[in-house]
Image 1 (cartoon, rainbow, N blue to C red):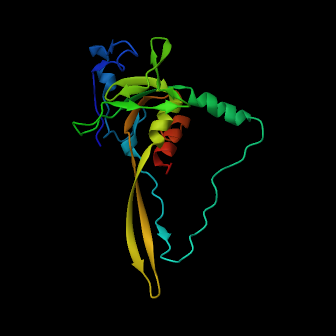
Image 2: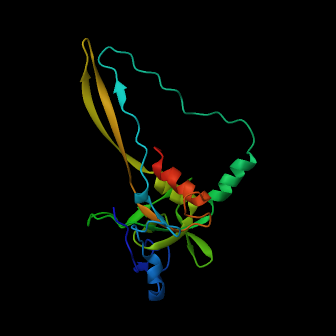
Length: 209
């Protein structure tokens, strides 16, 4: 999916935030060049590949189901300094552009929530809760909301019947795709691979969840 350059009026949902027009002199800053071979100024989701889950074999009729370990972890210890640093990292401002869909009937806003609070956008020197942000416009929001957008993936499932001599199994294949493509225009932690911001972005886009 190709990124989008925009100089459109930046406007939140009705009654939530005031209009903010992007000056023409800054229009070039909104342009995204996916063909750049040595990118150090921005990063786009289409440059990364999602690690697809391995095929799953479901037993046939009257066959026992495989046991799957629990992913729930009990935490009974106080917050560590590493966890506190991660929380602070999630609050950092990141400048992004949500790539508009090529579908003319697709929504032009993306909803995003964290702990019951709608996505926050920096307007002037104040954070405003917008609940949704427009596509194709440059937005400054907190890293934790960008993480939610990058983690949101759609799982397309296809099943095949594998026949054996005395039984048959259902092979389940997964194909994960991002629900929202976006460009990070500025990250205070860096955007190049090897920087904290670049590795954070790559890890979230390529992760299975």
